[in-house]
Each structure stands twice: as C-alpha cells, then as structure tokens.
Image (cartoon, rainbow, N blue to C red; front, side, top):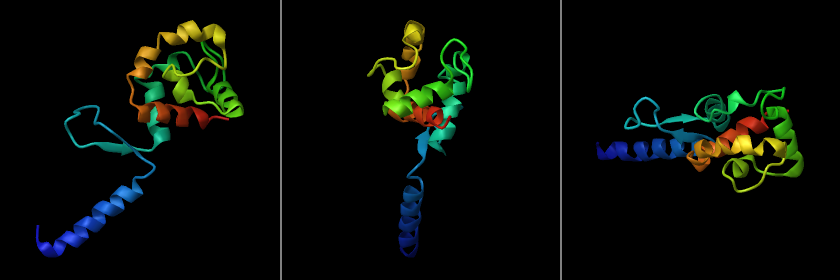
Length: 130
C-alpha cells in the first residue's frame, strides 16, 4: 500500500467501525472461516428465533401455542423491566407462564450455547412485538 493511501485507509476503517455501532457481527453460517457478515440485532434475532433457537416451534406472534405468544412475553418483560436474554441464559426465573418452565428448560442448552450478542438479538426481536 502506498504511504499516500494510508490516511484514506485509516479513515475508511474508522468510518466502518463507527457505522457498524448498532450491528452484530456473525460468522458466515456456510463457511465460518470466511469473512464475517453483519446483521442488525432484530434481523439476527428473527433468524435465530425461527432457526437454530427453535423458538418458533413453541411461540407464535399473537397466539399461545405451547408457550405464550411473543406479544405476551414482550408485554410482561416490558412492564416488569426484565431481560429476556437473562431468562434464556437461566440467570432469572420465568415471568410469563411458570407452568411451562419445565418444557422451556429443555431449550436452554441451545440458548446458553449462543453468544451474549445472539441472546441479546433474540431479546431485541421479541421486544419489537407489541
């Protein structure tokens, strides 16, 4: 790299870091050795909710299936100022439907294997429901 290009390169890298402030870096799911891709937390949360988190098998947007609806969960956590991310990491107890807690516990192995950013992204996605 020419020395005259160095300030430009530093500027571009700095600008990129600043502009990605609200994004979460995730590994390429096809080939983790490749460069990372970025997603907004809500998008990543939806992807996790519907995919590897397996949440969608028990939770739907506005109706109770096995577990409470996402709207009900979001409302309760919002009213109580609680963290969904803490719950799915078994750092806090159930707030919405304690009778379903034993069923939910089977999924904690999946959610606890997620990164803190992924658990937070799930929370961001779920809290977007009103």
